[in-house]
Length: 254
Image (tube, rainbow, N blue to C red; front, side, top):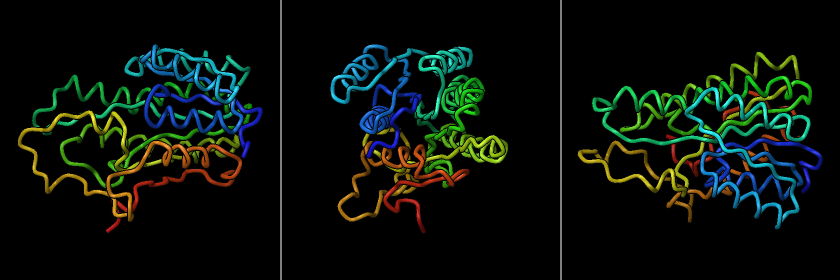
């Protein structure tokens, strides 16, 4: 399929995991890409790979999602890179664990800044280009947004806010033809999930249960989430806006 021929897409958090898989998926379907991340070396490697493998036009932009002004400036540059934007995939995020009583205010602020406030700044800056293109935004939330998660209250709060932001903008921007949708991954084999050290004193019975899908109980892959994002960003989902698509192998049902 070449659903993104002639389309320009911005993917944040594109150097690793879900963002990298999404960038590859969109490149394979013909998109011109603006890739953004704070890891400059890894981002440049991804950009070179996609250009070599898919012949994609790729621009890489380094930014710090914890910095609101940097997020907005990056989105401005992304909108001008190819003379417009058809799609924005807001995927950059961080995951932190901790007992709620021990979460420092500074860590709370950082988790919300990266996972929620940066999306506000990026979408606000990109909105004129998206309106001109009648484009769309896909945000990467989490099953923590809809079910909560023990020992990561700040992460869950940020992702729940992201879902609410996405659905609110789907209504507000519908008259402009701009779509907004969220993907909520469950357990996915990425560095953000597997790189966390054990949390002392955590009750294993309170941790989110594993997926139930036969053969997939160790979790999903970044490509599983990228496929969902590509669908929502494509014309196949032209009548889909305000949706919250859970991709978790039946992890959170029941």
